[in-house]
Image 1: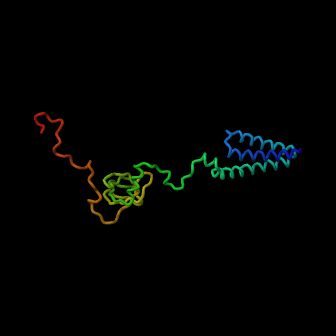
Image 2 (image 1 turned 45 degrees about the horizontal axis):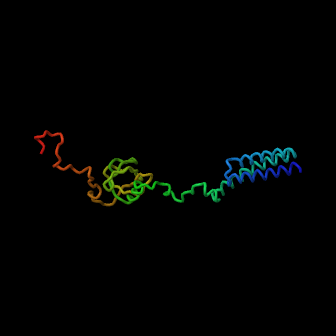
Image 3 (image 1 turned 90 degrees about the vertical axis):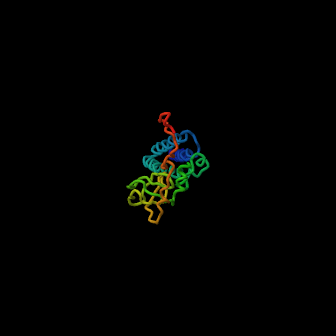
Length: 196
């Protein structure tokens, strides 16, 4: 057979091995065979003639990236691609943690509170008896201004100034840590005779 025919056969084999490398786990053996076939194709093309060799070299430079692109594009849709690759999340919420701490923050959207510190744009807010790290959605918020939670982003509350009328008792609830201590607790450092 002519060198040109062998060059075509090796080119076809090289492209076949290249595609097969994506679908059959071979530990790189099919990739090695692909490379050797393509090199052999170019060498035999040049042995057939310098113009033929240049055409084979140019063809490989165009075909290999095209075949690689097609294989990478369609590989995740194949049976082995679905077994090997993790399916892409369809919604951004799917990649967020399923912890109680994170999912509990979602319940705060729409709740009202008060800024505990100056927010330029970050600061601390007090919502439903707890302090949270928060970011102002727009302008700065002064300490003591009423706020409303508009969304949650990376375990931080996004808040804005709440212009609706409110009762101060609604916003600042006394937490057990802020409550005064009962008067009937004995002093452990008092002398025996003065305890009472």
